[in-house]
Image 1 (cartoon, rainbow, N blue to C red):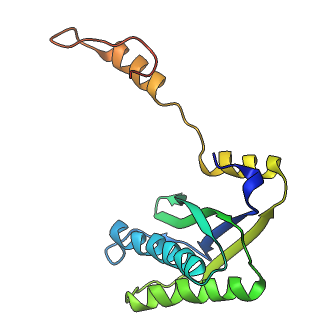
Image 2 (image 1 turned 45 degrees about the vertical axis):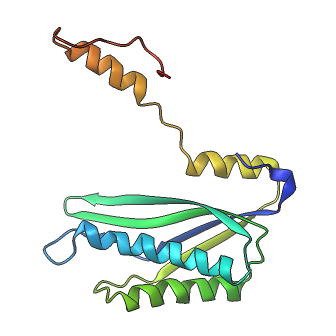
Length: 162
């Protein structure tokens, strides 16, 4: 985790109003363009000097399983932010323009939220929000051991193997 005390920090979410379907006209491959657009927008903020750098995390929100509807979005912890309402508007314009240049058929309007991280506690909460620690290893290994048919392999003891 970066050192809180050597920078000022902010939490940026670049998302969209609405969601995207999975259908004969919109495939999951097209969802990636929305992540590409959000990343492009954040890179433009950096190139323009409004932020010094960013730690990015792309996520997908599943709004419906039947029919499938999803919302690709991006969270970023940004360093030394100089973010005003006009900068947020410019970011939204960059994201939308990127999608337009890609010829995206379903164009969702950007929805952007910025929050300064004023305390170390705020910073840590956001850090652990975007990097949700999930321990799959032990559950995976337990299931593997339960279902294993003894054969030509070795079962490892629980815990990470280095």
